[in-house]
Image (cartoon, rainbow, N blue to C red):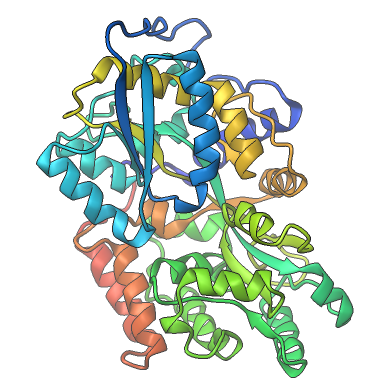
Length: 435
């Protein structure tokens, strides 16, 4: 796997985030200069065509209806049909379509190893010559490359793992938002005494557990320094710092909803936006969900926990999915016109404005105050989503092994040491420490 050095990921990301704050384009990395991108694709001729676009974001359906209407105004001979599927079913549906060579033209790709595996299998068209790709930061494009180093996807956004919290519930109960592990336990205990669910955590989909761990685990092992130790082989998942992070996830279970391991994420979201739960941990992409479901909900966000009081509270960031072109498409010219538009600042700004997300396209300025806050917190301190960015390989992936083991922990099938041991054993099968 092309493991992006943590320092490079963070430095490059801060440059782009700073550009977003200032409303100007970030410098192009890798020695690229403006004007080096491929010429704009010519409008397709002939009869109108329909492109089928796959996504795992069912909650974005209305926003994409607006986006695609704008695209179709500019390209009257191209129609785009947005088809979204449940996130937990998406990989199987996409795999079936790609292997059969039918049903899809534009595919949403999982980041990092998810995109690489599909590209390496020969199911995608390279996009290096698409206008706008050369202006996207190289570390973002790394999330959508094949092993041949070609780009196969236009990255959408930068996600952050955050703790959403209900400001009204905190204020009414005289509570201060937690920044450390001890403070989180104290706040959770006080909320529980008031009959309020402290944390609306779902566990039916195991990936939700690794997201929660990414913001809780830093209270034990810290941020980038520990990540670098793991990547260099100086630290292991069986070491005390990481094992303690698993133990802390276990100790939080009493503050989750009853039988949370069988709860869907949508049910956990509902507990939060109806005011029954005070906190909810997930990606920053849930901001738009909450504002759509409960526009008056007084939301704020917290970054990952610090190791000690006054310590760094890093934002846990990663590049989200990208859009690529299925090699089997019968409309490659029109598909390239469409992904060229996806790579444009016009789309990036609409995406950020309507979905309250931080776009991966240079020069896009977030307008939502909380997205701006995420930007500022990232500039102050950030670390990568460890399991996704660096440990998404293997069969099953180390990330999946860790997530499934956490589920086993919560149903008392295995203990903390077994979770750590299984995770390390998975990594040992493929991971090579950097020199």
